[in-house]
Image 1 (cartoon, rainbow, N blue to C red):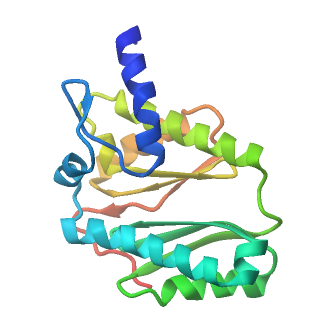
Image 2: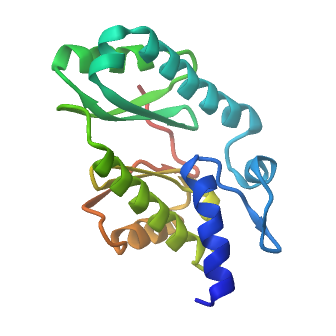
Image 3: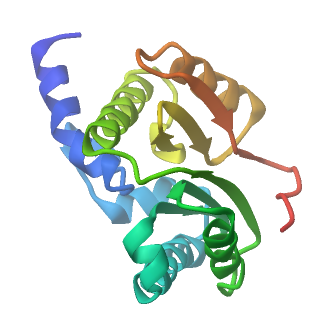
Length: 199
């Protein structure tokens, strides 16, 4: 990889980590509008996913037990929600999941919350680095649209979301599995022409 390409990819890392992966046109990040144009979600669902994540965050902030004792990440893709992080006990974990399930438009919830103390800054930084490495590797693949894959890493486990064909999913999974630091890859894809999971 030449230096110019490397610098472009490094400059994209903040956008990729924020969940708003931009499409590259002539080496320039085109932003969320271009992302929506490439996304297989409708514009309405794209916006709804953001709203689901915001509603969950507000609900958790309003609950003192969850706010003070847990570290929770909520990722919505095509109204399918992945919850990762740590909760201090089963009761609070169940409350977290129920809050998300009750948010309007949520069609399915994947509960990957572990019973544990909140993860350390070091652990979260390592996860962010893994996410950026996976995203960067996907961007370097020829004829593969990396903006269609949502990458979430928690404790070294990489979760992959998106609306893909089976070959696209296999390509993304294989690239993630080859990325240094990845402990395990969990596929949460919705496949084109196949029914989405039910809640």
